[in-house]
Length: 110
Image 1: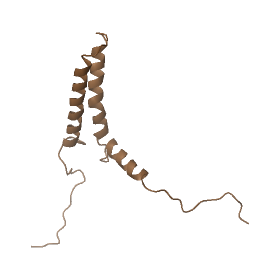
Image 2: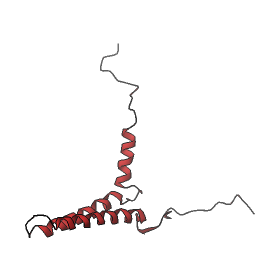
Image 3: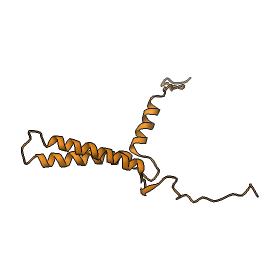
Image 4: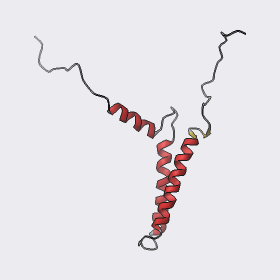
């Protein structure tokens, strides 16, 4: 057998299972967990002393926020990055020491 064969792999091939473009199993797990938390919070708000007309609005907003925020945090863009990975990368970058070796002075050179 010839070991030196090269195979072309198309760029559009994804290495993970996705239900929608950029939305796979980890994203569904995050949205599901947010939905479960939202459902529990909405159930707790049903016992709150808010007026009767305000309770449905609070319940809908709670459930929408608890499922929408995880969706926006884990949804990947065309480059494969999400808000969560961007925040992790920023935290890693921000923790590095920042030492500037060259400082420009404003004095005139003679």
